[in-house]
Figure 1 (cartoon, one colour):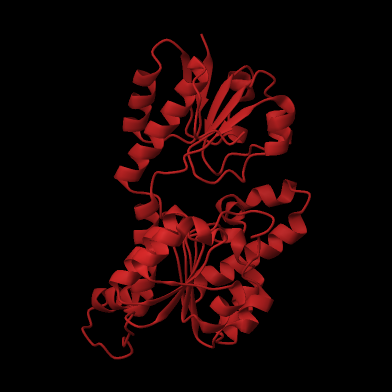
Figure 2: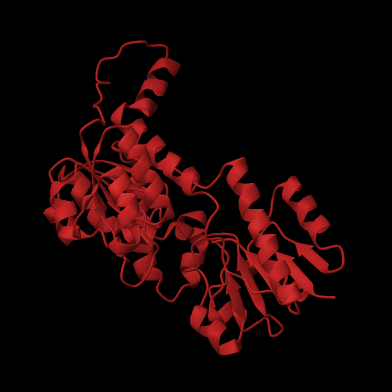
Length: 337
């Protein structure tokens, strides 16, 4: 019997499905992240299923000597210390495909909320006024949208942008793999500098890696048009918060729609800042994040782009499949290492 622990599971339907999926194993289900769970209950687990806010650093994983597999219920896996997992022979699996359309739709929800001042309109009517003074928006048709990343989510964003009759510029690290798709949609592949210079709207759809961290920074903003719009539904650390605040204050950036912000875990639990060796830097990031949260030209949502019933079911189904592949020794296309 294998001991499996699921963390950050709060919905009853998820708990029921998990229990039914592993009738012959010992399954533990926790609502909190791994690092906030009673160590005595999990010290001998063999499989851990986590979400992005669980601490899978070496410091945490060293406390779990029997751990053989980590299954993250997300596409991204930057919350997991892959080097340590390689060293200890711990397999890591993710969910590479679950919500390409889901996140892409949310990207345009943010963009439409900005372009048509949806939040302001809603607040206006709730206050008892039907005046449309100050609520003038702008069309998306024929605006240049710069899409950074043409993976599965990026492709859906490009398709939607085509439907809005937008002019599409794409920075694609692997353009040859998307040649047929490019011909179908008829967008333009460009380098990053060109995308920064020419885009009216820039939206991010790349994973967080050492190469992409702070891909949007002071130097990038300096190359952009005045009044550019920034959308980020990917990873918060793709944008340097301090530089975004400066760009908003100088009106280089007209609006930002953010489902993720740099160091968002600090906002979720700021007490942890006091115990972090980089607390001074993290406190600075948290301060910038608070400025963004209250800025009148920024819409921030709580990392919610993935959160539809359809997507959550696909995530859980794939995660269960990943664990069963480990249990039964099957080849798994979702294995990261």
